[in-house]
Length: 382
Picture 1 (cartoon, rainbow, N blue to C red):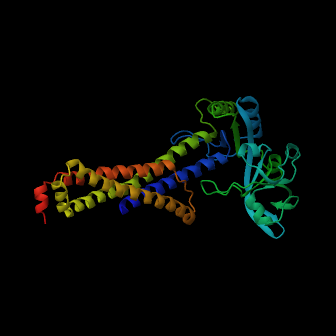
Picture 2: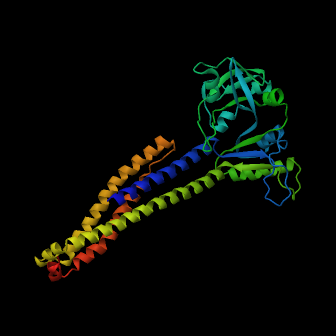
Picture 3: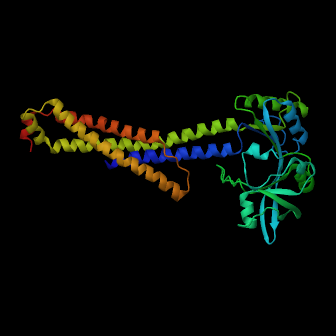
């Protein structure tokens, strides 16, 4: 029974860990935005081909973003963005964080909401206003429990008025703090902070998942035309499809979950072998009992069912205890290690069902051996 308990508990706990990882990855990618394409500067050409400098940051411009918005169909939002690391100061507090310049469409594209205050407007972007929206991590480190709305912070020694604070999103699947950032208008960031005219990336939100591949193809063709790239020349930009990335990551985490479950299932097999060994010992120890029963009229079927029921009872009881151990184990792992775990009903039902089948399978041989004992030989057994 102990072998079955460990086996069922291990399967449930391991599958819970695998599904927790899968959920974490999916929620992290989804937090970037739904139906999202991200255009990055620099080529992603395979090795051995002529390629432009990876990470080159002068190939995307505001005009590219506007052209995509106007000329590519099936697009909800186009979000140009620049970012850099700066020291942000308020009073005697300072915090180094990512300062991102973007447009008011940021909330809709990146699935953020406002915890307090408001987001900056299009007029703020057009007038290069010195206004800023803080992530929760920055707001907490600079202001503590006090409200930052209306206060003035300094970014790279330039004063910015805080107009809002974003709602918290927590860590991504890669462990990055999504709340550790400051958002300012794109024109302000480019002209007053960084002194650049190019973009670090362009986010494109398609209307739905059905048109996202067409939007990707059309945006790629448009940018190649705008950048005057010959047919044989590789792209000087890279388009990442978040929907395709999520499908790939889901497939990978499914494989990890299956692997963890299969490894844990080996202990179930060992538990079944343990049941068979114990039942064989039981048959040997109860040889005289079996002989007496058969002498009093017990049939082959009676003795067979007796030992099969005993084996199944052991596996069923072990399976029930194993469910409790597995669920509690998943909870303990989540609390102690800080991992996200998701207890799955199909893992519970599957592990319990396999434990019953294993008890039945490994109980048949000892039961058949007991049922085939000759009554006279069994009565003579010492």
